[in-house]
Image (cartoon, rainbow, N blue to C red; front, side, top):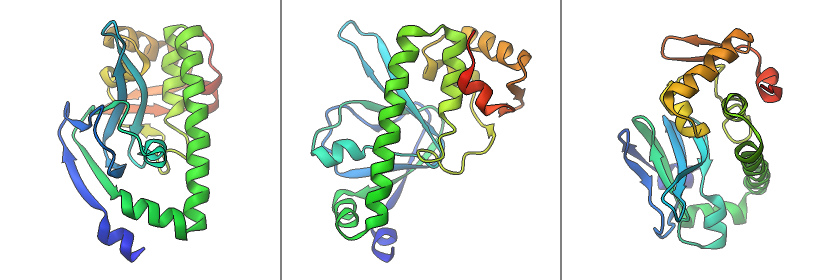
Length: 203
């Protein structure tokens, strides 16, 4: 752990700034110390497609590091965000010497695969109200985002970005979910009251 602490470094990214850019060479693994980012790309027609939101405690980019690829997506800060960067050499060293780290990565990749399969289902099969519910529920994955509390400091605009809805439509969906008793809209965030209910909600 001494080497990890010595090698990792912190970076501040303002709201709207890029944590990573598509096409960049991958030279570190990225974690969110405090804040929220979205992983997104643009379709050939110019449509903005959001793949995932990564809140405080989450890490991303391990798949591309393992495959030694350039980055396939942009990562943008949805609010002022502090990120941790672990150099590739440290990441590869940990993979070689630490069985617990290897297990963690296997679980991370498995959970991420499930998340993206769910994203495809949400985008193709679900209405916006249900997409917003699933989007919120997906942020409470203890493997991908450890330590996230039931009060999510996220705005309606940010929920819209992550679920592919306008701010106004996301607000309508959140009000519906509040009436269903699944969450409460608090000042500065959203308090989840029934996580399993959000995961299984159908409009």
